[in-house]
Length: 196
Image 1 (cartoon, helix red, strand yellow):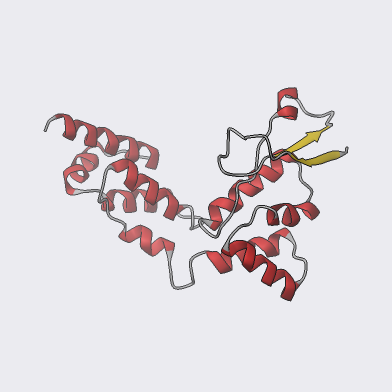
Image 2 (cartoon, rainbow, N blue to C red):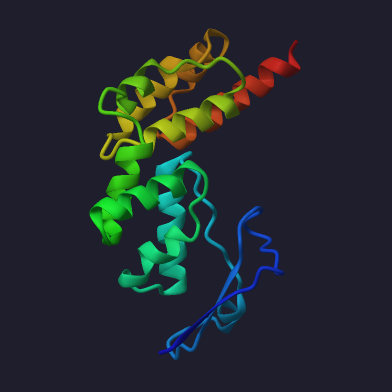
């Protein structure tokens, strides 16, 4: 099961703008979809912003490309830039080689929220200031930073942060899931805009 790793700078990846493309040719007998063998995906660059999002993308990429545990940190380090690259050089100098688990924990420690920034607190205090779609985006970003939040807590936080012109109508509809709550809020917002 050999992998050939080749940097192809001239290729442009339609799935990830602004990042280098790597072509991995896998010879897998268990691949049920032969189209995936020639699909070119790339790992996005990381400059210190949104570390949890970047780690998630990296893990998805590694799984799809069947990257071995031993190759993950080295491959990820090729995709660091700016302050993240400078930090990695310093970290490697003082700590030596890291496992993927150690590397991701170090990234989150360096670039993630501090212990004083509590995403669940921020989530419970979040208020809608623009449209529902923008509020939903911020809500999802915060809620993904906290594990094991019960859905009724998320529903309560979401509804409490809605603007007054949407809040009461959403409560009247009594949506039972977070997805339904978001859908109803967007419909009510659209209805309110049409009636203006």
